[in-house]
Image 1 (cartoon, one colour):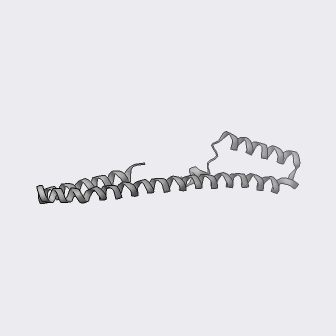
Image 2 (cartoon, rainbow, N blue to C red):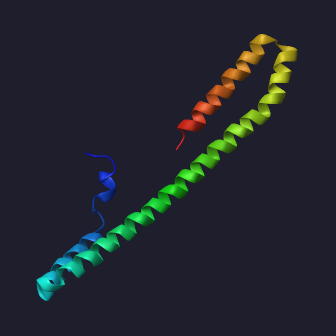
Image 3 (cartoon, helix red, strand yellow):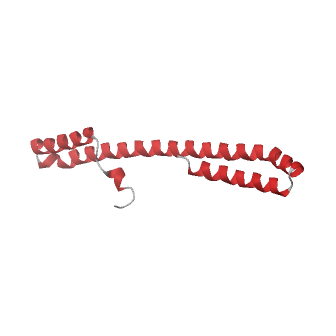
Length: 112
């Protein structure tokens, strides 16, 4: 299946009903009105797809903002942790703090 094909699949009951109504209208009105009926149906589908795109963009923005907040927050707490680790445990403590920051970054980047 090509990328994005699932977005074009008509699965909603209302979309199927609209398609049936458009086909019935074409039968009733004849071939003279066929372009207008097809244009109206395609316009409704395009509006639905545009609405989905806007929702997807907002969700992506929200997710990226959350990731940014988590990474900046972990960096903010890392400064005192680095200082404490360097003073009390030396190199091993600094390495542990680095590993923990890397783990936080990986978990945040993979979270939905």
